[in-house]
Length: 89
Image (cartoon, rainbow, N blue to C red):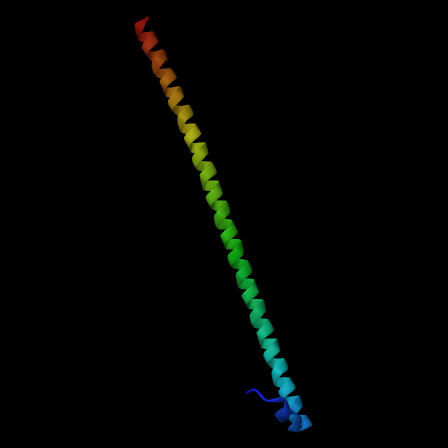
C-alpha cells in the first residue's frame, strides 16, 4: 500500500514506526532473495565454465586419439612392408 506524503504526515508515531519496521523486514527479505539469486548465478556460471572446459578437453583428446591412430597406421604399414620384404627374400 503506497501512501502519499500528506497521508504519512498524518500518521501517529507508532504507525510510522510500524511502517518502518515493515519496510525493514521487506528490505531484509529482498536482500536474502538477492543473495540466493547471486549464489544461483555463480553456480550456473561455474557449470558453464566447467562445460566449456570439458568441451575443450574432449577436443584435445580427440586430436590426441587421431594422432595415435595415425601413428598406429604408419606402424602397421611399416610392419606390412617388412613382412612383404621378408617373403620376397
